[in-house]
Length: 363
Image (tube, rainbow, N blue to C red; front, side, top):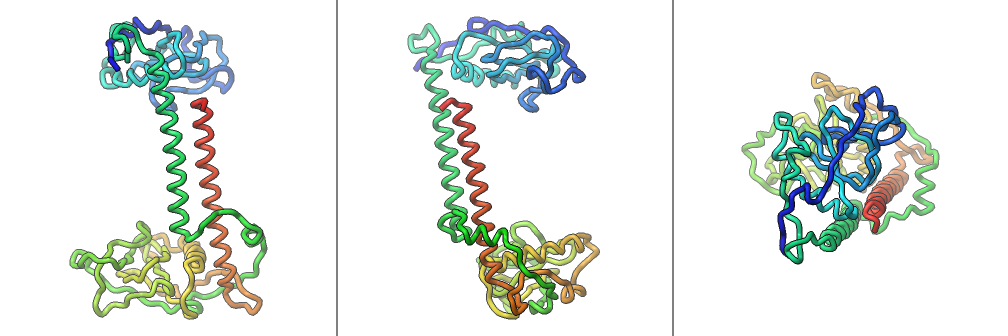
């Protein structure tokens, strides 16, 4: 394919607005109003004020050189030096031309404002199969192929995200069955338990991080980021390596953030290890307890406030069985249902994006 230079005035005619549409004229009625600027693609609102209506399937260029394709009828302000480029072309050809104009932003600014007078001699490279005339069929198919590729990539991203969800959650589907729906809607008996009733509490000691060797054991420190893990290190001598299946890490002073780990770990200073007194728990059960503990975070957000002395007597409310013991079976099923619900809602959102994109691209 050959590319030939064309001046903009060989391809387009231009016009401007005829009314000084001000902020006070915007009333969310009538036609969209376009002005200079990239915020919301230059659309500042709607107005039914009497003003020239510019037909859709045109391009706006503002004083900063920002070019946007408009597929709807609109009005232009006059004070912001915005103008149109119009021609008898298809939507996809106009989109192709719009992409050719992106370099204008590198040329024009507030100190050198763009105008039709300045750019009508501006040259862009246009595909031409005969070296003389623009190849509109090529431009049409080029944009269509880009749109189809984009939609294909959206579908691939959706599938990849779903695979990651399944890997992280150990699920093989997200269909909400009757059991899931029931547990999300049923009322359940609960009881307050002191932290000391459920856990043996261990306190972390100082760790000089820059003296440690890299390894594969998580070091949980006094932070919320990265699930509390500050670094992966080699096993520390004379320090407890906590069993992740029976232990919750709790960052204290000014943080108060509990985390559920997926491998055995060490803890650093200002971190507690809460070890279940009744043995190992599944990931779902630990996640449920972590979410309940973190509800207490609002009481210890101040750095000068810590839970060290108060921790054993802090209370959390959790579901119980008929014999008034923690109902870990309920916790397991509840978190499992929540995982499915999150995946379901996210996949539905992704599908809406794909569907809307197809609608916009007319595919």
